[in-house]
Image (cartoon, rainbow, N blue to C red; front, side, top):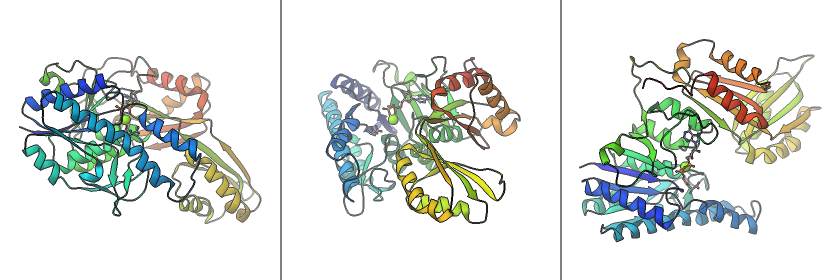
Length: 423
Ligand code: ADP
Ligand code: ASP
Ligand code: MG
C-alpha cells in the first residue's frame, strides 16, 4: 500500500460528468490498495470568472487590501470543486472528506495572489487516511500567519499537489491534465509536437519558467528540492483502463541523468507572450547606472527578466530589459517619474507586442553551434531577433509577437523535434 497524490486540473474538473469520472478513477486507485490524497483545481473558467467579477467592481487595485480580497474570492473556486469531488466519491461508496487550505493547514507567507508555501501540517490528513478515507485538499491556496486565505499564483494547484506529496512523502504525485504528457512544445500550437516519455527535472524547470504552462514552475522547484516522483498524464483516458498501464503513461520527470542515454540536444521549445520590453536610450555610461535603473524597478517589486546594455558611444549607451506585461505600465510610470529625471536626457521606449521563444535541452551543454542553428532558422523565416539570452541548457530570443507561431514551428522543425526518437 502506498500513498499517492493525484492532481486534477480545471478542464479535468470542468463539469459534474467529469468530476464523476475523476471520482471513479480515484476510487479505482483506492480499491487497488493505495492511500489517496487528491488535489483539484477549480472547475475550468471559474477562477477567471471570479477575478472578472472583482475587476468589474474595481478595475485596478482599489485599496491596500485589494489582493487579500482577491484571494478570499478566488479560493472559493477550489473549495467548490473539492467538495463536489468528495460528494462524488461518497456517491461511489467511498468515505471521503475535503479540506480547504487553511483547514489542513497549508501555511504560506502573506504575499497575496502569489504566496509561497512555508509548511504543511499533515496530521489531520494522515489520520483520515489511516481511517480509510480519501482526502481531498483544495489546490491553489493556503493561509498566512494572521489566518488570511492566500493563493499561490495562477496554475498554483500543481504546486499544492507537489508540496502535499513532499510533506507526506508520497510515493508519487500524478498530475492529471487535458494533454497526455509533456510535449516537445505546446501541442495546441504545433500539432506535430511529440510527447516526451521522460523529461529531466532541469529541462522541465526551464520549460516551465520559459512559458510552458503545463506545470507551474514552483511545482517543479518543489519536486526538485524534495525529490518528489512526478508524472504528467491525461485525465481523458477511460477511467477504467488498467491501473498498471495508467501508472506508466504520460511523462515522467526524471532526476538522474542516464549517462548511457543518447540525449536529444534540444528537448523542447517554450514560448511566452507575457513579457514587455522597455528601452532607455542615451543613458550616461558610468558606474552605478544599472543599479539606478533596476534598483528602482526591484524596489517596486517588479521582476526583470532579460537585460541588455549596448557598447557605449560618446559616453552614452542604450539599456533594455523585459518585465512581465502586467507590470509594464507600473514600470514605465516609475521610470518616467523618478529614474529618467535623475539620469538627465534619455529617451524611453516600450513595446508590449513582443514574445520570448526558447529552445531547451541538457544536450546543449555538450554541443556547440546550437544557438547559431536557432538564429539561422529564424533568419530563414525573416524573423528579426531583438534580444538574446542564454544559459547552459537554453537559448531565448525576444521577437515580434506576430511571429510567435511561425518561430515555434520553424524551430521545432529545425531541431527535428517532429521526428520519432528511440526512447
Ligand atoms: P490544467 O488545467 O490541467 O492545470 P493547464 O492548462 O494549466 O492544465 O496545462 C495544460 C496545457 O498546457 C495543455 O492543454 C497545453 O496546451 C499546454 N502546454 C504548453 N506547453 C506544453 C507542453 N510542452 N506540453 C504539454 N502541454 C503544454
Ligand atoms: N484555479 C487556479 C487557476 O486557474 C489554479 C489552478 O488551476 O491551478 O489559476
Ligand atoms: Mg495548470
